[in-house]
Length: 271
Image (cartoon, rainbow, N blue to C red; front, side, top):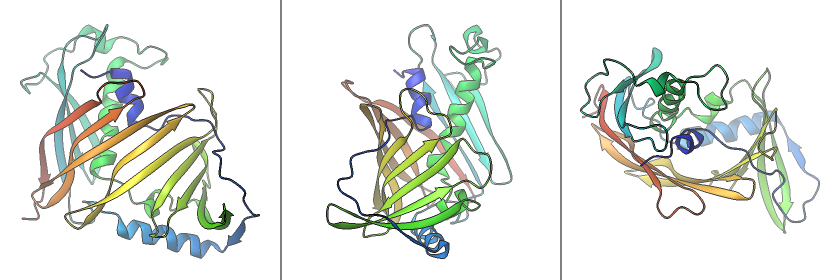
C-alpha cells in the first residue's frame, strides 16, 4: 500500500544538508557561457525524450491505496497533450468515473493551508509526467545564466556546470557535476528558502541505455542524514520507451513503495 505523503514527496525533490565533502579543491576557473551552453545542449541530445520522437498525446493510470486516515483505493488517470495543460481525473478501481468524491478527498490537506487533499493527488499525478515526457535540460534551463567551472578534487579534474535563474524562481542555483561521458553524476539544487533542516538538495542520477535510448533509470535523493532510492522500469509502447513502474525505497523500509502505470497509450504510434 502507498504511503500517501511519501508518494507526493517522491514526485518532487526534498531538502538536504548542503556542502557534501569534496576533499581538497583548487580555486575554480570559469569558462565562457558558450561552453556551458554547449555542454547542456550535448547532454540534451544524448537523453531520450518521446516528444522528440514524435509523441503528441499520452495517457495512463495508476492505482493508489491510501493508508491511515485516508481510506479507499482509487485510480489516478493522467492525460497529456503537447498543446494543452495535462488533466488528472479520479476513477474507481474498475476505472469508471467517480460520481462523487469521498469526503476526505475534499478535506484540507494537513500542513497545506488553502490546499485540499484532492489537490495533492492531482499535483502528484501531473508530477509523474516528468518521467514519461522529460523536459530536456537545454529547454529547462534555456533562460538561466550558465557557466562552466573546472576544479581539481582529490587530484582529479572535475567539470561543474553552474546554473542561476534570470528571474524569480524557487531555486536560486543549480550545480551539475559531469563525468567523463558528459553525464551528470551529481546535481545539487539550492532553494531560495531552506527548509527541513537543510539548504540544498542533492540528487545522484544513474543512466541506462535501453533499446538504444539513454534514460535516467534510477537516482538517489539525499535529504539531511537520510537518502531515498528511486527506480524506474521501462517498456516499449508502440515504439516509444515509457515507464512501467516507479519504486521508492526509504531508509528503514523492508520493501519499496511501488506504483505501476497501467493502460499506457500514445498518439501517434511509431509502429
